Length: 149
Image 1 (cartoon, rainbow, N blue to C red):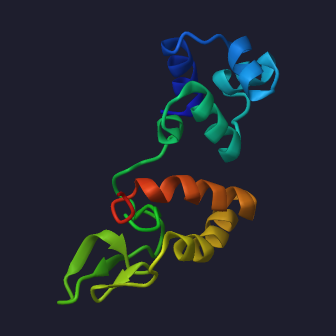
Image 2: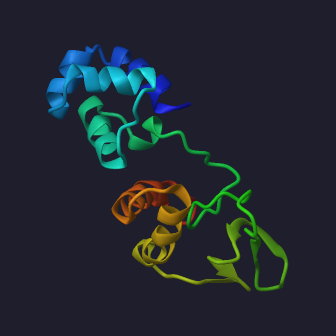
């Protein structure tokens, strides 16, 4: 569900008006209205602030698939040339891409390493700034299988 659909739903569940949310976020009521009618989309960092203001997990506000993505880096498997990783015995691993997991070994030890390597590709592919890509990955990765606590 897109943020334009989920934001008004959550806001109403919490009993918060557009004006009250705008005040909490230091934006205009019109900005909240534009997010809710799909004219604009809040940045990843603003989405984090919205989640805090409404006391909901940020992932509830983001329209992200949780299935069919690498459970290490979050890249969807439908991306061209996105092969699945392999286990130590050579069999295909359905949870990880070949760039993150090959022959039973993870290519990177930490989320920071994954972000450092993957964020530039995400920025280029999606047309966002590198900072936005880093911020987005910082929100996404902790929700994936490899990184969940």
